[in-house]
Image (cartoon, rainbow, N blue to C red):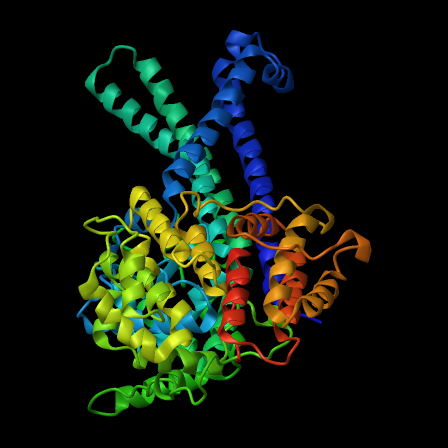
Length: 639
């Protein structure tokens, strides 16, 4: 039976979103009632001494309640719209600087290498990296609405004070948040907190305004004092809102932080890495002191980002000691002993050697990592073999090839090279002639010639990883450039009047990640398979044809794959052909399935490509495409 962990956590993240809305409504109700109590006493004489419950239904009461609800809702809505830009907007909100992918800084290169290794090993596109240059504390967070649009932000303190193993543990922790759907929840929580906290901000403004005006003039003293008192009351109520906001943060975040710690150990197989990072946070702190949004971001960060009272109740993370003990009992004592030994010994401090993933090259060729069955069990994970594979692949990329992937022009030309490298030179030129001249999107032979030899040498094993490494640069294209690139890729695919499995996969991959709505959250609209049977027929028809040697074999394989979805054989027939548009529409429909229904789809596809006991490269790429389109990151597969 498929391991449900990843998919259950995805479903849990969606349920938590509903719970978050419910908690928000409770907080709004209580804050509204508190403001109405203030309004009741302010206007009581004007309302002929009505009882509170009668006053609440009077014109004064209804207007007061409506104003509070509109104020809180408006504050949340404004921040929600402001954060529509996703992870990039959050990074800029806290003053983070984007790291140049081709940076010469040794610490930034260390981070980039760790992130790229983990992205390839786990099957997600490389997040865009940012650093908070002025923050000396040790902290990090990820933000975004989808794995393909994620950004990772680290503090300067994390870059400079953590060893490679420790930084790898932090990165793996943040990748867990990408896998488990926590990013969307975290960004939405910022917007919700903005509305709850707005009353306190208005109260502070009124309190200052009342004090200032009453000090300038004695006239209308009672009115100014009333404004000041109202402001004081709203400020107090605002602190009640802060309390509820922190409670919501703690309720949503604590369990998921513990889960991310455990996932970090699973990904890196090195509990000392993340434990060492947590230990250093306990010694040196991880507070964000240079941004006014530290408390808003508390639930998103690797460690507590803001100082607060009642931390045992309101903290978004379990205590450092408890987190280290949960990672491995006895680890905290060992770290303290090592610190004492380091302080007692003269000379440079002891640091661990780079982890095995940084030292050991992959021994096997092809795609490392997973067995040929139970594909859904591999989703949202990273294995030792997959990481060795990623390290080996990156180590064998020429420096020029790799640096070009980090530029917009280089990333565009890579897309063309991936479609052309297996063709003779004359056919390459004929295909490129179909693309219009353009400063960025037009063919550039000098760049293509730097990609083609490596692609010819490494071939199929490099195709998807190279595309994933180029995604940060491709995401920098504006909307017109993205549309132009997709049109050019379509022209190259149609040049030979046939579409290969890789061309199908690549075109769908680019359409998914470069579309105008790529950052939008895909809602769950299907909670059973009946509504998506036409989409399943399209997908399984394609997979059955790819996995079988002839029409008869494809029919049999198709019926086996559909057996768990269609109620009878007569309802389900192999489609005669599948177009690119039909495939994209089918995958878009299937992505609207409940997360708990997706494992069966992944495993049915896996059955088609493994029925002959092996997975070839084209089948692997098709499986990766399906998983990617269903927001199910899949690591490299055994071939």
